[in-house]
Image (cartoon, rainbow, N blue to C red; front, side, top):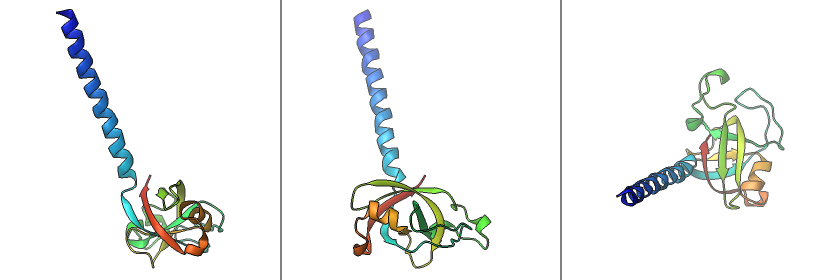
Length: 134
C-alpha cells in the first residue's frame, strides 16, 4: 500500500508543478498585453518633467494609457517602465518620460535607441509592437 500512496503523491505533486508552470507562462504573456505601432521621436523635455536626449532607453506613452492629468505629478505611469517587443523579436525595457498625443491607444513613441533595438532601421518609421507596463 505504501508504494501506491507514493505513486499517488508523486502524481499529485507533478500535477501541481505543471499547473504552477502553466500559470507562469500565462503571466509572461499578460505582461505584453497591449499591441499597436511603435514610432520614434526626437526626445526632449517630457510630460513627466524630465529632459532626456535621443540615446537613453525611454518612451512616450499615448495620452489615454499614460493617464494624463493636469500636472506631471498626477500622471500615474510617469517614470515607470514598459517592456516592449517589436519586429526584431528583441525584448527591451524602457522608462516612461513623455506622452504621445498623436499615438493611438496601444501605440508608443520610442527613443531612436529603443526603436532601433525593437524595430530595426529608423528608415522604417514604425513597426508593430507588443508592450506592457512593468
